[in-house]
Image 1 (tube, chains in turn orange, red, yellow, cyan):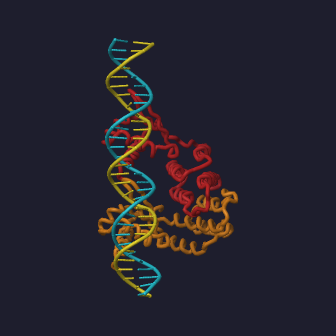
Image 2: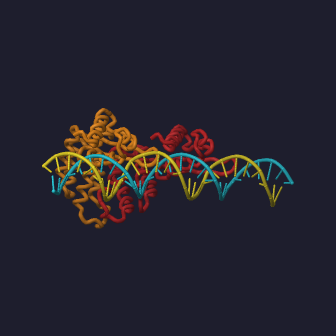
Image 3: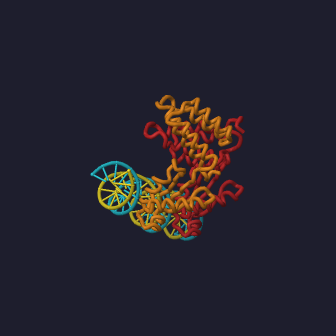
Length: 156
Length: 156
DNA sequence: AGTTAGAAGGTCAGGAAAGGTCAAAGTTAA
DNA sequence: TTAACTTTGACCTTTCCTGACCTTCTAACT
């Protein structure tokens, strides 16, 4: 596995391990410079290796003083639970089931009561007056993004 | 965050924090001098960082003895903030504006960082591809419902 | 009172400094 | 020999910074 993408991946994961903040910040062009490659190669690495499925979140900002921010998603106890949850959710999620899941998250003390109330109110979807068709699909996607957000290591 | 605009923003917020009046008065050219930049850079910072959504009001006066006045808008106590927020949200709400509002809720310690991240990720709406049309309208409604939920007395 | 010079701040367009996208060309593994 | 993965480069969007030019206000001088 000596190819460029793998080496960049390795390098990033290494500094990501060492940090206690739960994230690292870097400049795309600078990193590209260190590995003597084109900047878009960095995007390739980020797109293929630092995905949510693999436990990472990437934020960025353009313009002068722009940057890349790679955030670690929890791999510990909470992270495990998060993976299980994702499988439980699947492609569709009914309102009853989502409420059940959220209650369980409260019991496990992974979310507060306030957070739970918020999640439920969003997932209840009283706001889209019939304008959306595939409710259960949307609910599943929303639930997943929320779980992802909650497992961000930089929010602890 | 090493760029000039960010540094000026931070500087201004710092002195704004320290003052007890709730506002600061300064001279554009003087401030520009301190940061060795062109005066219009100050306008850029004010236009992009000290907006109403983020809780600031900027007044100014030209001519001899002219000045800039940056006012920090409080959200008021005991449920008043709900009304203020609703006004700011209005019927439609862009992503930029909603992020500004959420940041402000954090600053006022009305929501936690985790809650803020969750709200942002829901409102960013990466989940409903092009399936929904009036995004800004939906965002406004969601934001209001969330605020209502968060201010429920039984969640404290 | 009217005029005018100087002292503020305001606007806008253009260039620079990031990062993003996409498709074509090159590699590698089955 | 394909099919999947990697690498590159041309072009795009967003954000920042500067400078030239404009508007408003005060004060001093008719």
